[in-house]
Image (cartoon, rainbow, N blue to C red; front, side, top):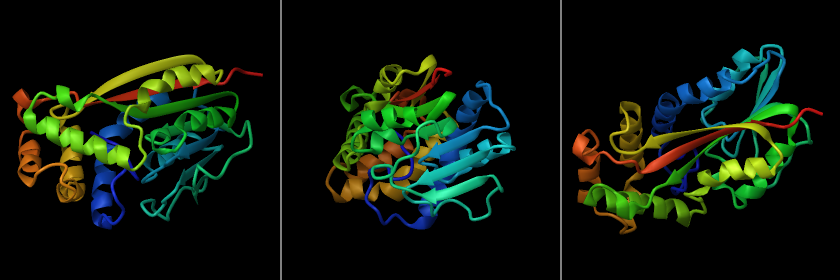
Length: 262
């Protein structure tokens, strides 16, 4: 049960809540993302693009590695990024549905939980592949939700179903992550690697903490819209540390590949 930034919930969540969620998102995901980037032949002179940069934590990480290069961090909402940024990091508010980049502009593109939130995610990934310079790498991390009816508890069935329905009502494709490997291959990218991480109740302390924060700050609309009861929400949160209630509700799918050298 995850997703960053504009994750399909209505606007208006208090800023402090978004910042709490942002910090927990970093704690849950950044170490895995940085490990994958470390596995690439990362050069100090690379020009990098962070799509849907969120709090900017990975953009800062890349800026520290690309000391003689540059990093461009873009998001439709940049309010969660600090103003004090490294000299080689540029932050830009940008709507990927309407704007584009010149082909061959970047040596590395990172896209975490971005394409599934766009109206045409398949075409958006194909565009991003064209933005790569010859030999450049694309790392995509996104999600594929498991069917809620197969959840291990009755409260899990109700809450996960409500969560996914809220995503989908706001145009998010909750299953898009499984398409990423095939789409990257169709875009002509090569030397592909893949990694799948199970997520959901009981799948780790940082995962549980992130779910608690999401439901604390964003659970009210689920109740207000009649998708789940307040009691079900409370029971679900209370069961997160119960080994007998653990569940694989979501898969985080990470895929990386490069554009063939010229």
